[in-house]
Image (spheres, rainbow, N blue to C red):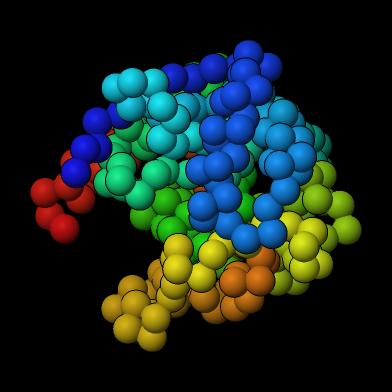
Length: 243
């Protein structure tokens, strides 16, 4: 299995129409109720794109990101917001996205050393949630503790900013009408009873987002700290050798 990919970080505005189409074809292999216009609109709302390219320049994965500041209750936060992350199945297991995204996070933290910097992500399936829960030291929602009011307010503000009228502050979920938003195809990331018994974090995700198959999204936050620079790469190496 060839997992060798190279990552490029580019401004979204520099993408060609053919690249939008290439990414959309990869996207629709994983999701139902997709629309090219909605896909492009969402992508263009981000500032940068991480492209994962094979040896002949084909797009085999991508993740879009943007960052901005918000002020809530007299406190300013820097936010890194990422869109859908897709990797072609023949390259599952590659660490290039993790290392590139980690570097991007650390650059943002270096530019904002005295501010709290948070990764804001929406989780349609358990795999996205595990990216957060398995790699971050401080994140919400989590099994071990309830979300403090400060970050409950931050999460609600960000969710309502992106998708006004769709966020439920009690559940921490974004809900959409059928056909209004894409959802994972059934074969992509199914959750079994065995998985929930063996993996408490997967069970927690299922409990928090019981209708994820309909397109509900769990709104999540992960604190970007300097020590993640060491923590995430070490975990990636350990997982490669101790599966």
